[in-house]
Length: 400
Image (cartoon, rainbow, N blue to C red; front, side, top):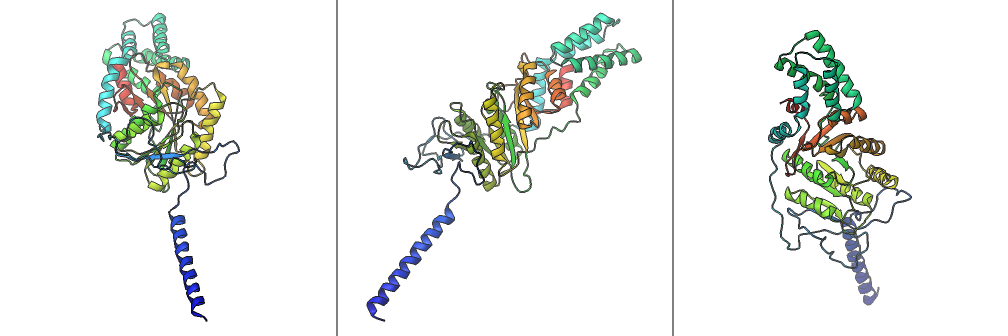
């Protein structure tokens, strides 16, 4: 074989090997572009927008950082890095047990009108029909609901008739027992916050505008971090301006990363899908997905919420759907709860603002109507003013 032909063959083989190795390296390092599905799309799924994973120990407040490639397409992975901006200091959340004591003290100050009223009425020497009517009215004004109020009045009537006690301490004990039955300590209030079958626990958080949903997610992240959980947040509320940055800042305060879109109005389902994918890859304990503040009377938005849940379940089951309710809305909160429960199968209630003008009976009314437990309560504006709901502590606070 001529020498020049041999040299040409060697050169071609070398070029082939170099090109092949380079291609293999690129393919091996390539990940599914954020916002794309690895499963079949729904017919009405729009094209996804870019998604940024904010993994800084502290996230700056403001617009998303610019991408490295200004001409990148919508499926390009965008890593939102600090780019030299000032970081938010990482905080140490308050222990959960300490929160319960503090929240109970606040509940005593703000919500004890119900307990005091009932104790005063039941401690009278003569409890006639007028007194029972007053007791029933007190319960209804506390948003207990008609059926639970009548049930409690009947139980109290029977016990007072049989026992005949007027001693304040005995009356308090009697009332505590009956109220505790209504709050139902037997309901499972444990939050699914541990890994499930080798994957993260997936928690969707829903609720109408103005209930403090994004803030609640940030506070719940602090609760989980205080329990030594690895958490990742998904900013799927892409309709409200600055919602993603608000969530990212909450997470950054406790060192929790946030997956968010770099495009305003991006497909929420795509962001939720990408957040779950990132959580699975990073082997975190919990992925929490924020959703837009849906108005329960707008069917299109509720359909979108159902779609987010379906898209998430293409790669992992949704373990918790927490509905955030403003306790001061009273019976209107029940209407919201029914609609959301029909769409996404709510597994737990988070009651915010359970102080001030809130009425404690809403806890009983919601649980009785939906068969869904109140799992968390918030009693203030502070970052650690959220805690697991304790039925006994709640009833004791009402009667203190």
